[in-house]
Length: 168
Image (cartoon, rainbow, N blue to C red; front, side):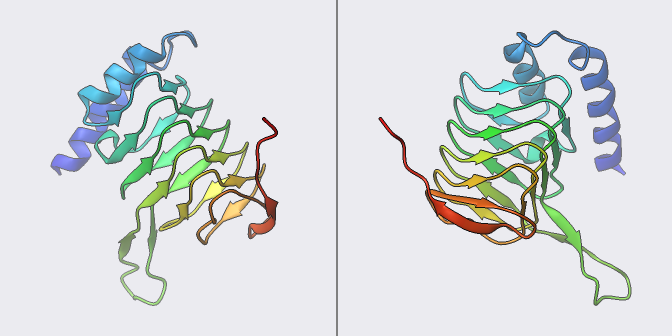
């Protein structure tokens, strides 16, 4: 019951204090999230249209971005490193249900997205997935398994396309 009350308070607070704010007020939105238990690094940009289920289960490093309409269904912990971009309309889902259990019990499976990764537009990162450093999940990709470091992955389910390297 206390969990539900906290989430109701969170939802009302986000709606009244952050949801309507203009894009440049990232620091204000980060402050609101911190007040509800999120751990957020410096220079992180969080858009007003994000949907975060439980701020206390969210860790975001410095210089990262949660773009417009990103959904963090974080009944389980979601940990996002430094300089990570989670693009518009992406979904991060850190829980599921046990389909072999007649009671359909909740299974909490944390998500980890390491430094310099990019979760592109409309992508889905499933429960228990680890996105290693520098990995990319292409637009509308579905990651239900871990993504190796410095790789580009795409599709449903996501498949390795090639290595990732910077030109400079």
